[in-house]
Length: 103
Image (cartoon, rainbow, N blue to C red; front, side):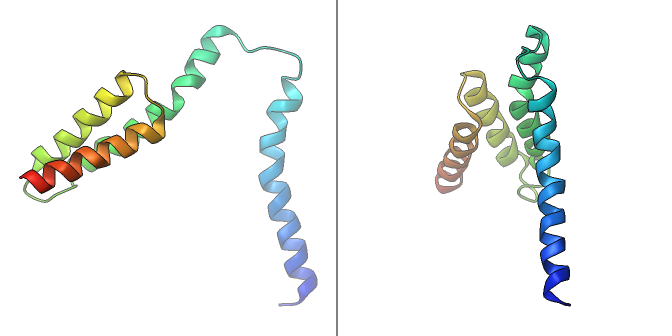
């Protein structure tokens, strides 16, 4: 593969990544989103986290669904208390680590 093709591929990949991120800034410049849309967008990280965690509850440890249920309950509780996504993930990991060490 020649170096010109590699450079063009990198430029193309950069444009494909940059354009979808730039479009919202251009479209909504100076405008504020309605409160309902802002509320929905604030909850997207928690909805994504829930979609990632919930299926794993059933497969996290074969034969021990309680292990997954403890992790899920911890994640829901930490998120309900208002922690950010990183704190929810790290808190759930810490609680499951303690649970596996104790039991």
